Length: 232
Image (cartoon, rainbow, N blue to C red; front, side):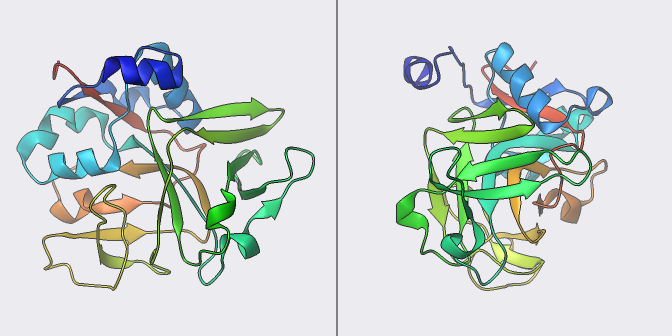
């Protein structure tokens, strides 16, 4: 696994079965800095699905001081009811491909996620890449997501509510369900997004821990949790 990660990313990364607080919330970082800090340390940010698993038991208590935190799950989607072709922008000055563009209102910086041509016709879908198989490349004031491995999940919910998580990434999808469904997560979304999912609350409220936060901006600051060989 380590060799495969090194071959794909150019950096040796060590993934383990445990979660470890990498940055406490008192050391909170914006998204780009959290990614850069993890890369510099050769670590892998915990996926949203891995964090969900921790939140289902008392495992989350070991990372409580890092919450809320960035996950390593990078996503991109456009407005409800639109295909990527309709919602993404073709940028000739780059490579002529379509990009989902999200402008952070706090910094006015743009975050761009290229849409593979085979997914342009998909409506109400979300692109997903897991750390460390994605990176941010800066171009002026823009940040461009480069994904080495990419999945697309269809039937991404248009509104906030309880939905089943998909089996690979735990992303809300399909028909709305209820809080009583133990496999459901609470989706909080904004109209469009390019960025990492953030997770976790500052207390032990179970509903807080089941929220998938799509509405946080790249300039927001959070802690960070990594998938490590050792928990401490």
